[in-house]
Length: 249
Ligand SMILES: NC(=O)C1=CN([C@@H]2O[C@H](COP(=O)(O)OP(=O)(O)OC[C@H]3O[C@@H](n4cnc5c(N)ncnc54)[C@H](O)[C@@H]3O)[C@@H](O)[C@H]2O)C=CC1
Ligand SMILES: O=C(O)C1=N[C@H](C(=O)O)C[C@H](O)C1
Image: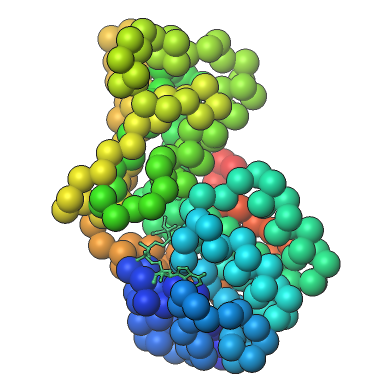
């Protein structure tokens, strides 16, 4: 039995994770923490793994506290910087505990990012559109940022030319942001949950890769997989693609 503590337990994702852990035969929910609760050895109640779905401002402090409390950590909270990831990697090494941070735990999204990186060197243009509910605190989504970085890395590795859409005219600033030279557009619309479209274009053709999370249940198989695997993946792992055995990686 793996003991699990959930941080952000009163949130949209936290509630869903608490239920998924409760429903799993091999996992036991031992603590539910939210804003105002300190993360200590006592409050996480002997958890083997702590799961964090909180807010970008709090997540790094939570991870460092959970490592200090002797736990492995699985993080879905977005808004991470490279410096924050480096700090966590060092802390995980020092504590002898492991951390998995994934911007998206939905299988469709992990595969969409993977397919986009595979396709990117074969197209002149690539732009990312992410669509979410208006209560989302960060923009662009962690998934869109990761997708753009993967597209840019794949194009750089294959020696692709700069994309014409990155420098296309933008007289009124309506062309979105740029992440590693890839255009990213963030939409916030009532009724939506979490969606992403990646458009890859050549003269006369378009490849569209689209992923939709209609329900937060879509993230649960990935979260539970990470909880079950985190003890065996030393140090810091970023991205569920490194936890799954994706062919062609
Ligand atoms: N990786 C993935 O697959 C997914 C990631 N997310 C990310 O997860 C995060 C949470 O999303 P939602 O659940 O929709 O947000 P939410 O706003 O519904 O929940 C956040 C919860 O964290 C709590 N909280 C705030 N500060 C805290 C602290 N210091 N310690 C403990 N709890 C604290 C809040 O009170 C709230 O209950 C966001 O960063 C979102 O982007 C969301 C869905 C999927
Ligand atoms: O806030 C959300 O809802 C989501 N956040 C993650 C992100 O920023 O990529 C994952 C998913 O898109 C849902």
